[in-house]
Every structure is written in structure tokens, then in C-alpha cells.
Image (cartoon, rainbow, N blue to C red; front, top):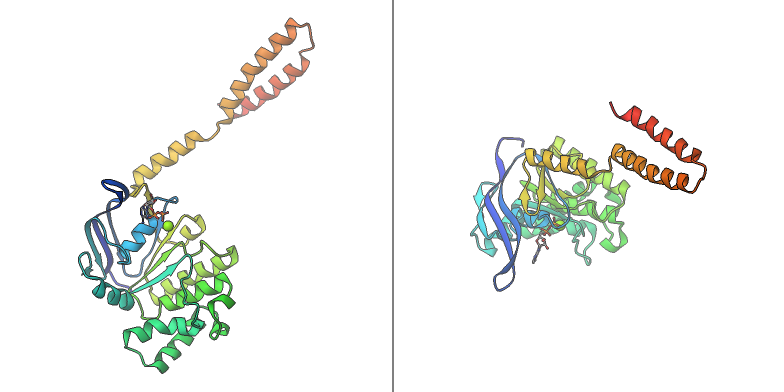
Length: 291
Ligand code: ADP
Ligand code: MG
């Protein structure tokens, strides 16, 4: 299953959300990226940076305002909704922050549904495969439970089993651990890692969580709808570094405060030993930190 095939190619993709008249938000700007079969690509960025918009465009759930979107070798940019819903069903798997399971169906039925919708599986085949997928994600005991009888972590694992139902070329996850506890998050991340390594499943995962980012092969950083280049990322990190409090600068400022304090005390004829003690300890500190 692992090959050099491109599963995603975005060419100059832009997305504007029009709010009213000609007032719009630039949610994505000049996005160029590719994902190859067998990769795990993490899309990181703060809230509002365009992650969900990007996931929705890769997932053909939304259209770009400009540029081309090629998924699994098909230019889907101008395909109609009929074509796209079939395309999604057969080739893509989705895992959202809020699980999006169907509440009237059991876990087993939720996983069976995509297989039945393609018409490629008999009911028996779909049932057997759904059971195996729930085994695979480690929750065979929940087959007959409905989503509201499951924990968040269990629901997310059902969602992963469902995403795998039709052997997708790409699984798209948008903040998959955003609503679950830490222990369940680790389970999900281990699962992603194993599915990628042993089954060759390709993932693109949007997150603002560093834990999630730590599993990924490649990380793409988004800021204000743009992909940040490595050199820019370095610059931003340096800027953040400068924003941090520098203890040497603080210590030197404090020495000047002590000078004023000492002058004041002397003017009033008061004891300055305490000021001197504090000055000595700051000078000790500066001696160690300045070279
Ligand atoms: P993220 O997932 O990284 O938090 P989003 O893709 O949801 O970012 O949003 C990117 C930008 O687009 C934000 O400024 C957001 O407010 C705006 N946006 C997202 N969806 C819509 C929408 N349906 N209508 C208008 N603006 C939107
Ligand atoms: Mg989002």
C-alpha cells in the first residue's frame, strides 16, 4: 500500500469567506502542498489559522475560491456534489472532534453504514468487517451499544473504525483528540501510528495540540491562512524568544530601582544595609549570568 503516489495536491489554493457584500475573511492564502501515500501529515496552527477550512477542502466538503484541488489523482475542484459525495464515501475517511456518529445506530451499525452505502458489500460482509474493525481499534465489547452509552474516547475509536470501513486512500482528522481525556488521546495516537506503520493508512491530522504533533512524520504550520516556511518558523520562534522575560534585563533594572531606594533612605538618614544586601545578591546573579 505504501508508494510514492500523491494522495493530495493543492495548487495555489485560496479560500475567502464572504460575510456581506465585498467584506470577506481570507481563511486560506496561496496554499501549495502535497501528501504522499503512507504519510502522516500534521497541520498545526492556532485557533482561526485555517486548519478546519483546509481539512474541509482536502475532504471535498468545501470548495476553494481559487486554485486547484487534486485528491487521489482526481481533480475535484469543479466536480458536482453528486460526484463528490460518492467520491468521499469510497475514497476518504473522516474523524471529527465531535465524533459525528449517528445516535440511533449501534456502534456496529455506524461502522457498517459506509460499506452498505457503497453497495459493494452484502449486509453479512459489512457486519463481519465492521466487527473486525471494532476489534482492531480495541473496543469489541461496544458493538451493540449506541453512541450515548459510550465514553468520548470509545466514540472516537468507533469513528476511526467507521473511517476505515471502505479502505480509504486518506483519513482526514480535525482535532481528533480535542474532546477527549488525555489517556484516550494517547490510545488514539497509538492507533494512528500503528494503522500508518502496519497498514499503510495515510493521515492528515489538524491539531493545535503538541502531543498530537509529536506522532507525525511531517508538520505543516499554518498562520493566518498561510503555510509558514521553515525559515519563517525560525524567525517566529526567535521573536517569541525575544518576547520572553530576560532575567538579566530585569536584574539590571532592579539595580537602578535599588539606587533610588538607597538615595531615598540616605536622605532620610535611615539604614541602607538591607538595600546593600539585595544589591549584592543581584550582582552575584549577574556575575553568574553575564560573561
Ligand atoms: P481553525 O480550524 O484553524 O480554527 P478555521 O478554518 O475554522 O480555523 O477558520 C479560519 C478563518 O476563517 C477564521 O478567521 C474563521 O473565523 C473564518 N471562518 C471559518 N469558517 C467560516 C465561515 N463559515 N464563515 C465565515 N468565516 C469563517
Ligand atoms: Mg478548526
